[in-house]
Image 1 (tube, one colour):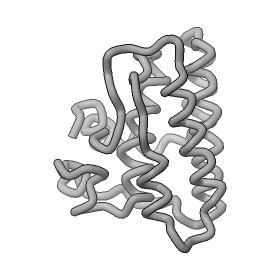
Image 2: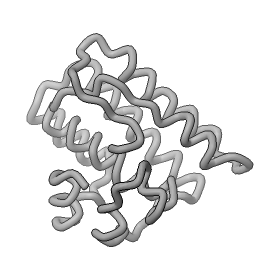
Image 3: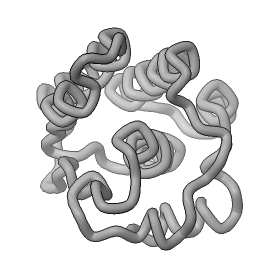
Length: 148
């Protein structure tokens, strides 16, 4: 698991709500258009996950978050991975205006994980995040896929 995610897990920063972190970041750092769009999409994703009942108030154990398997499939449900791994990483990227990944491919896993469930809004938002990152003119040489 990434050191930034570990630090957030230990400090409880993973529980920060997107509107709060976005508001704080806007006042401190100028965000690029891509960072701003990502922050808005992540806020929408959080709202959608909550309204669908897949947002967790409990943080998984450090052991569960430390999985080396893609999407932490051996220790977390996909929705927990989204919330506590992917979204935590993206919060770090936005809040510190770090370079966005060069590539992101989460939609196909979301479609598979949520098959047969009424979570189309969540999938649409994940797809929008993938498209934002994959079409970002500010691309860097890093990649965000299943091994976030």
